[in-house]
Length: 434
Image (cartoon, rainbow, N blue to C red; front, side, top):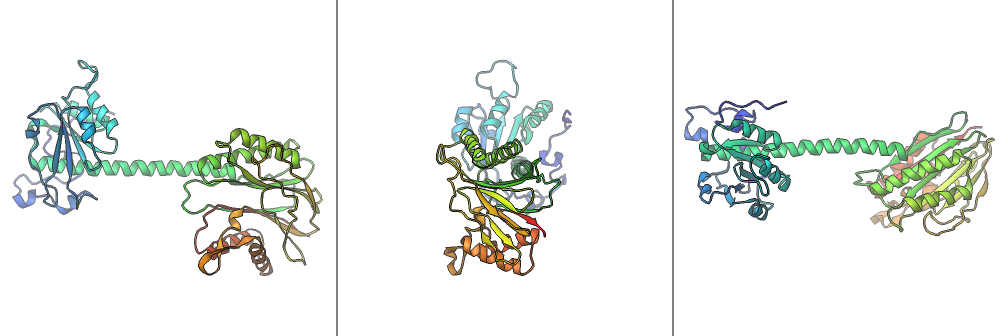
């Protein structure tokens, strides 16, 4: 949509709707900048204007100006874009650009606003005011459309008009920047949700009598989810396969690798692979997809027989699951044959251990974020697996189960740590009733 061309450029900020119009017969007190016109973060700092124009005497066009606190607005003058780039330091708040300045490397009217576009690329975080000839409102409006905050007529400049225009241009630029960051934040949130769906999928347990619960808590100050991931699927023969893993690191690359490993695990499991053959293939996937040779991943896989009374366990550098059975204290499954993490040793093997589950049980798989939190006075010691087992035993004795148990476990670990955990925590629970 084309911008409307204003009939009169008396006070640009007024015409743009950023401030109320001044009274024609206002006194000097009314003309002084009001406190509410002050731009945030510039109250206690002198405003600095960078004037870009090629007339050696053109600086006379810019009168002496005062900011809203009565401090003088400093003016720097550049005769070309090369000088402007040198003078464009962090303390410059606004740029006043003469649109008559010739664009370097351009001739004729190939691009009337080429110099403005160059300045906008040079100073994307700065407010820009365009200076044009009197009556050339169309060109000024086009400059605003391209990216300038406002435009002024060269022969209408005075101290009050220009100082107000500078302050409002800075404020509008700050507002535009805030809106852009908000939009970027929303986009990141959408990306995080998509990534979360990849890391923490809906289990495929149709036809199984097992109950499933899971909980994930990102570590402190995390913009994206970390490298923790899990999955549960039931194959055609009735076997329920579960896994949980952790890619070292917390950045988007690690999270993306976790998604790839999780998807690869599901595809390979549904294709019939299990145990050592499955983990060996996943290691090849990791080696080809990781960004650095030092990236590795720990993994725990469990395949539960169709009758639900026994399971196979493979550990690749990962903490052993916790098994709770009726009438017995919860305990860790054996981990003597724990193989190395994926990506550490070429040609590694991961033995599959047979485990008896019984008729009624709960099996909890977790990442190391659950056991590496600090505990005790001074927070010098880690909770560790023994502390975690003791905690879960107590919570089970209090009648907790399913999602309530996982929520209580994660919250208590956080409380023991004295605040948010530094690592991500993923926990999943499979239950079989009598």
